[in-house]
Image 1 (cartoon, helix red, strand yellow):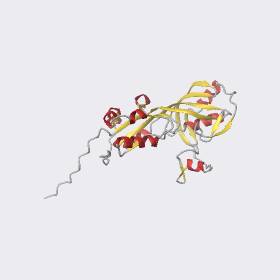
Image 2 (cartoon, helix red, strand yellow):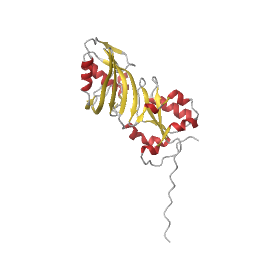
Image 3 (cartoon, one colour):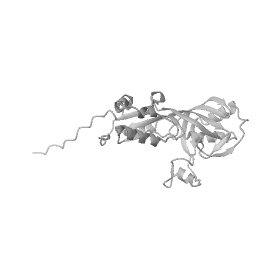
Image 4 (cartoon, one colour):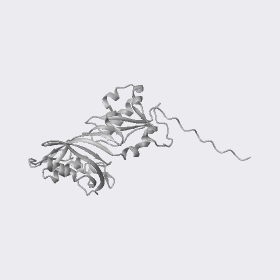
Length: 257
């Protein structure tokens, strides 16, 4: 008699913690800090995020819980929308407000029309050279580590696409903007390049992410409020995996016992 075919284990049913959590990240902490705090507070083994925000930036941080970590590539690959402010007339070592001041230049000659025109030059398919203060690696070493040693190396420009770059308000030296762009866009470098083109320098003073793909900041929970919730009160905020329309391979058990 022919031996029966081996029986495969039935797929594990989804746990209520398998999914996506939208968090409103405050300034001053890293994306890893947020991941660590959620993992520790709610006893989860697998927590990730769907696209980092710099410490100075606030807004939508997409947190991936348990089996939701399998959505990482899908979430990270989505377009992003930001609102922010660039500060004209000053350049910094990191191209944002956290860096040391390198130079100060008068920006009185910059008009609303001139700035808006320069911003429009970045619309569509464009190339951007990543900053030295970034996690991109050169020969296995992150660029920010080389920057800390005072080293600067050649970086290959990268293609990106900008769908919208709107000047919302101009009150020199500050200019508020809205930006809709593809993943991997360095907004602080965009501000620095615009300041350079205008002959006065600029840095990114504020940045707030309002959308990632179809996920919106309006549906996010402030981090401090989230960390004070009881576990059962977190569950209504978790977006289940079936809403992302993707079949996920069976992972190992993700929730701490």
